[in-house]
Image (cartoon, helix red, strand yellow):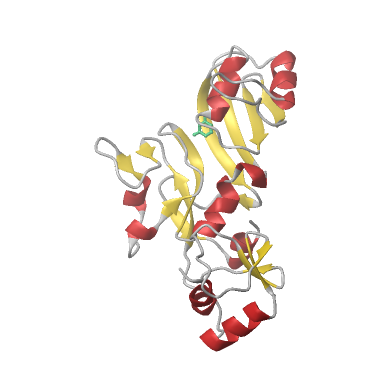
Length: 229
Ligand code: URA
């Protein structure tokens, strides 16, 4: 979409006013100052006026307590998808901000705001995610040290970023990571010779799974939750 049109769509500025603030060098797109109203803006771009990031007024943001057995996809031939748990219009416009495996439960965020979901998933954003996990074998001190320092996983160029692991019980821990590599938590535990038997996401950034939501239930995020990411 053209930048001036975008500004008109997500603020209450008129097209003429949008052009004016562009001319006065007050707008950035992904951190770079832009003055040309014809500039093309991607859905995932971060547009700001005077340093304040804009969001589409009509955007929707939900948290779902993902149950077991549902895939984090919008379409799937074999399995139920998490979208089937939603009773909302225009479901095809929603996308998942940070997937969970079919056998993982817990906090899943869905939105139609590409810029916002980029903040959750972009590796450069260091958005922290906390998981509660149970393992097949006892969790050793050595495993905790390795996981916290960063582990080289198969087929990855770089080791995982430093993480925090709090052992809750012999085979239970709370792990906070700031990336979202494919099957990351399961692969981290496998790399220290253990196996994840249960995985549940409790938190993404400052957004905590609402304890009033039963598995399969969802609710809209509050404006404070949306703004916190
Ligand atoms: N890490 C995993 O291994 N699986 C998930 O679903 C989420 C993080």
